[in-house]
Image 1 (spheres, rainbow, N blue to C red):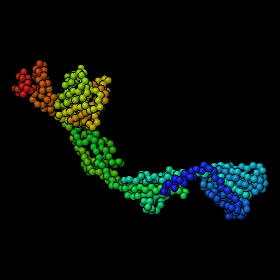
Image 2: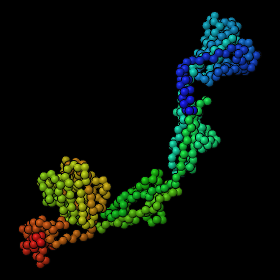
Image 3: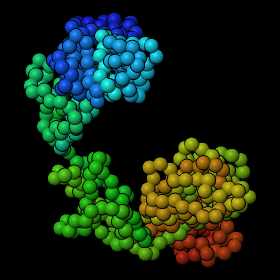
Length: 491
């Protein structure tokens, strides 16, 4: 109801918001205190005040002595015009030409002097005594503006530690008051002039005022909650590595500081990536103020220096691929390369643009620590990128690219067609992988392709055949091993 009446009042005032109003001072009706013009005097009517440094505003005519200063002030709007009707005419005793100052004029033969401007206060000086029988002040009334309720920032809610609260009101020249409690539980009103701080759960109410008007009440509650701090996260997590790792730390809690230690005694603040070049365990924690997270750790193990390289040659290692666009798999030395959308060129592998991660490498043995792509002009290794969620780093230079990390599965996203003449996969470890007897081509499987590989060795160089080709276990590689392998497959 209060809000409705306030809006109605505003609407009614707005109808005449642009109409000028006049305030008329007449001797004997509106008076000051002096009947003799020898001291300061003043009088007020409807928000307008007239003063004189040596004036008699209680006399039969308003008198301003020679050398006096007359000042007109308004609190209800800007003064647009003041007309002084005097006891004498221009050039006569007590006439209007004895006033002078900026904005003031009078005409010869007239008893009226006029000041014009646009301000809330102005002053005129007197050369000789002036006596006025009437003073009419014209005011441009202020446009009424709706008084808006104040706004809290933040507008209540949970907080930790100490919270700075501000109040604002878009209504020009409005004042804001607030108190602790609800609208029905009014405490001491505090005039808002600067942010205040909340350190415990509190309810506050605020109101805007302007003149005699008052806005609606606004009530908010700030609830203090216990500060919690998330534990830091290691990237990468615990793992094995070949040469070097750069370990980073992050904390999901805003404004948290992260600390790490190599012995749980000496702690250093985390600033940049931590270089790891040997076996190590790193402990970490985060804090906000005096609240700390739990301590977490990650362990990194350096792999033996000896590694095994498995090279996929596009001219030799064809797998189940052919010269048409399709998916294909190439298996070599316990490493599987899968291409979800590609084909075989005359001497290279082709992989095509795809939103999937269907270009990947899997090791059935030791972790993969490096993959080197030998690209081709126009179809360079920069056309692929490390798939989301995969460990390690991927960099490119010229036509080539290198992935480094430690994982048994590594996937790539194909952004644009790429072509590779060779792809070399480096496995961690200090010994060659072992294979099942009959796995002549070392692809991790025993099938008809091993028969073909064994015959190739016999036709070219039987001494180069691996030990897994000796199916009869007689120490020799010959046609009887081919027969034994075929018998094994048939059975």
